[in-house]
Length: 307
Image (spheres, rainbow, N blue to C red):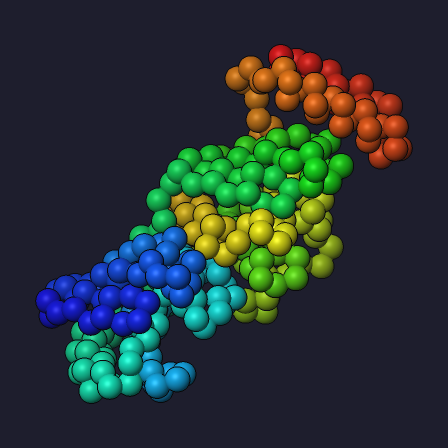
């Protein structure tokens, strides 16, 4: 169409095969939008288009994506608040006629596949490298490896015993993301072959958008394959794009069976001060009875070997 439609928090630029959504940077713009900055949405990724009345004298143009088309929404699993939905364009009510015109134009571009789930991601995921601070550790992703480095002030003794972790994307089958705006948010990496870890979905819960761990699963704060969120740690605008990037990479790269065990961080020489701090914390855990004599000796030997 070659036209531009400006809304309150974003501008939609219509091309022949896609719409480029450019998000604003104002103080009232949701932080997720500011983090995403812009996204190109192929028309083939859309299932329907609606125009409805909004709040306080606005109308909302909503381009609804096909299930499975967007890694960001697949990772979110229905947990995004309405105001943070990147497919909603809020406009002043006086632009309703213009918005209706574009809604009709978009509907005319939808093909017969619009009613079907997408067989692959059609929308590009946020690009690596990425990182963010969770409550109990720092998460990093370089495009092929996910790393968790634990904070001594927040990580559980189970995670300290396991040590810092790295997970090759080739060893993963999916992710579970539970919004930090809910109680006990977290990001969990699911190994290949685990129940619900197939690459055709994030599998956070049998209930859509629930994000609850399955019965019998290790709690996220005890799981070395998960980081948990707290107030100011792992906010949506940081952790969700991260989760989407990992999920997209998992689906794109899986082709042959590989080992599923997480690989401890190793190889490079570590900062002696960091090792000393970890040994001190390990000693605290040992004195508190949270680590056995054998576990203390084994872990201390492992840490000293990293010097």
